[in-house]
Length: 562
Image (tube, rainbow, N blue to C red; front, top):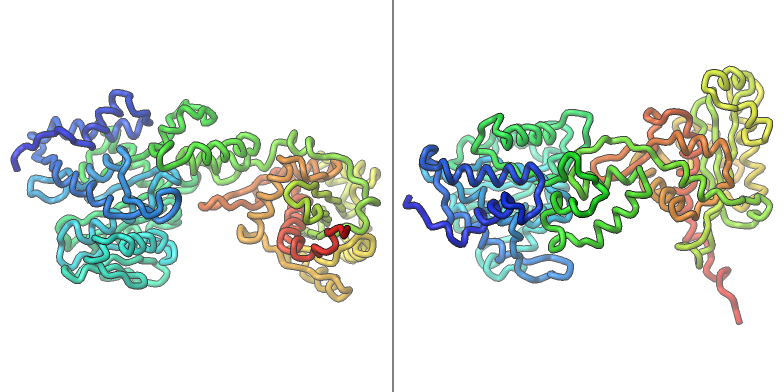
């Protein structure tokens, strides 16, 4: 192929601008750009061709797509410079035989930088842009529902594009091109055997969510019969600690970009902040977010930053999803100063008659047991009012002195001061806890309480027989994430008044939370340094209150007749 002029070359221009420092970028993006510029210099030796026309053709495909939501809904999609670099590099570099050089691409950028649009656009372009007969393109994930996170927007983009809707047919879980007998479908390991695939292209969304390498290996080995297959993984950073297929590809990309390993068929674009950058310095955020200010809004990232500064448990979430840093899974719950700042004074007598909800954590018979009551504000003050809470703890009397010495915790002092109740014997008396809980239900306005059935099933049944209404709150992300986050928010806003209970304070300082791939959190007993039963009970009581409080408060009671 004749050498083409490189004027009006958005891919090369981006690479030069990054190299010159005109576009802020991290080390890995700089290396990706230097890689492109080096290939341009060495193409006579390597035999590779920079097909600018092919690169611009792929880039020019994206305006056929339409934004689906937000301020640009219905408008044609225009690739940002970094997106033009990614798309142009992948589709513009050719081997000596004229086929595409890039066979795998790993794109790691934070959320809200246009990953879904790039993913959908690449999938659709592979469907028709390669002009391959019988093309088989898939959005792949561990579950088909997850794979549809890319496929469904792609299908909607086709419907909203006058040009594409004339060419392509859309059905449930299927986009096809009748002219070439080609199709684009979501593919999940949970519903498909994934055997016998002859794929020409695959988009793997959020590779960090894959716990095993099964899907990756199946897809990579399913391309043997195609002339220029392409597998694209688009993801945010994952959680450190355990080896994963995502971390494996990330590490491989670092070695390739550094020139330690030579693999010209694999494209890498990893946007993050640099080692030594302060995550609190917003000047470096654009390194991780090349779409900041255009695709991604400054207000959104600044709002989350405010929370991350005050809340260590949210800090890792912010750094992973906004700055694309690989973080550890577990994080400390809260700076104790924040907990102390919201203590206030709780007067139990003044809480009589107020609607409240309970949380019961029995742990096991030789540990501390806890019951917590939370009193939500009236409905009219729901978003600004104070939540009061009362803590009740029990401990086996005969084990108390030994536990005090072993744990270096003043259990005996707390018993004397009335913050813990000692029950006779070497194990906690569940009967005593049941009786005390019933007494509390007669003193305060509550019937409903949350509990973990692991240890409290029998006690919950006995209380139910006495007219109480237990609700199972299991120690899973599904049940615990929302109330745990709500507790953090109430503490930071100084709206969780707990009276400075010393046992609860000790447990608040012990509490560590663990988060999953989606940023959901829950208490982790194994990671927490000491006992956290009171905090778990508090979170369970919040879980019940958040479910029921607004439904059970009668608006008529809050209305003043004039």
